[in-house]
Length: 54
Picture 1 (tube, rainbow, N blue to C red):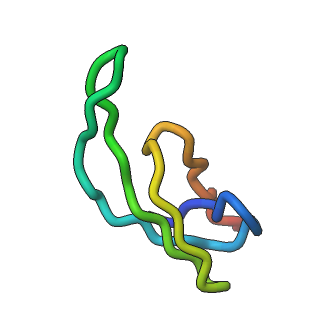
Picture 2: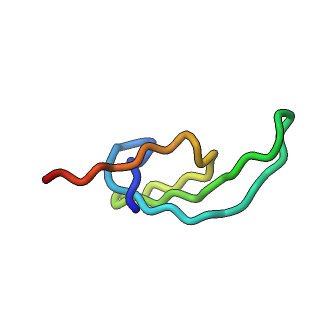
């Protein structure tokens, strides 16, 4: 599955990284790597899924 890069919007792949503690409970974090070589580590629920165009 491809996602939008948080910085440039290009297609990005996501690698699950694990769950981190927070004051409101555990939060799943993932690593994002896009076609422009941007890399991020952040909460999984903040990513947008790219929808394939017909």
